[in-house]
Image (tube, rainbow, N blue to C red):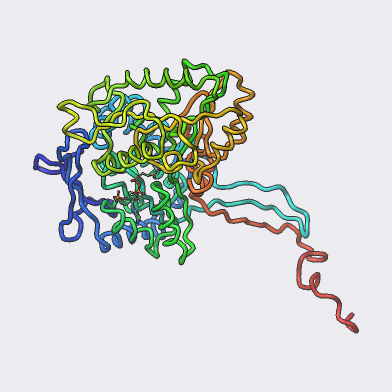
Length: 515
Ligand code: NDP
């Protein structure tokens, strides 16, 4: 894999348009910073409106005039499996790159994030084998007919992702779009674009896709991203990011009635029922919260604990959190890396101050770890507030950092009501030894994914997405695949004799005097 096309020490990555790497207009570019050290990792082209126009035109041409939308589905499936092989061959480099670019511990990127992305690519290869033909029952009213649904690709898709979980997110955007014959203009976040760029380089080097099928533009969301989603030649927008930007994108999509899928924020609950196995539940809830330093949309940021186990859970949580190692993401013993940026740490620290002002009890953390390596990046201690009021800002607003709100409840119904009392509905977890009871609770949670005795549940066969202001539509699974298709109902008439059919003479009453 060639990650560095430049002769200089600092890798430079251009835009990828119509099957070729190129500079942005006027040579515009920005630096990508390694969060853990503050070092420059790469210089990346910053696309202007004219560059976005070129990328969209390439995707448009590849869709309207190229072979990809008409390539047989089984051939597209084969290509996705080939791409998966390339990821597999480059797992170690991709994992290191993702860790350095996003500040994610190498243990997580090596053993979960990159292998999961690889698995997702294979699963979409498998789903791509589904024929775009869906039979419907024979119909005999008003006429005998054979009916089926033909699944068409949408056309040109604008896809935008955030900085967290960037590699997996790139795959769960690109793979279903490719599987169904669309063409794409893809924009990663300026804060962590490198694993997306690396994947596009692998795809480019493989020569497996016709030119123009995938185009990559990098640059600031408010300029490059906003212009891309509003582009009249874009047919569909798939956006993952904050609810605030999601609202803006819906408004931009409205004048052209562009189709949108939105994967937005969350404030997901983990509910510990009175009979929870505390050895698993405490560790699991903390993993649900602190994985990726809490910078995951589905992070279990509100933990509801029954009053009969509350004191023990809090005590165990504090003891376990004390053991978590905050540090260098490249050190395999690190549990929690830095936040993505100093700006993000400022935001999280503001919420820690809000939690204190609101009267929650700071049980552990709340500050910056002390030591030489922590001076180099935006590190923060894993933080737990107890005695939190579910209506407080700490419990209602997405923080996107390592801050857990622990909330006491007395009745299970009360826990469910509080868990649902949020504008979000992305994910949840329920912890109990009684699986039947846990399933009944799960069914009453208004969220797209509910894990039982498990929190971060990303299964590429299953739909992923949010209720309420957590989004629109689903990604992954068959539901995610279908989001990239427009169905056409095709009706084939089988009745040669028109008598009694839905036809002009069946609609009009006989005219008096006519034979
Ligand atoms: P943002 O919404 O700020 O940015 C997300 C992406 O959108 C980035 O690529 C950004 O570009 C771009 N962008 C920003 N403004 C605009 C705009 N006006 N028009 C078009 N594109 C724009 O989110 P963050 O990057 O801060 O990511 C964190 C958020 O993502 C959290 O709210 C989290 O919950 C959510 N998320 C949701 C997931 C889900 O599946 N539901 C999964 C993961 C995260 P740039 O960064 O280059 O400026």
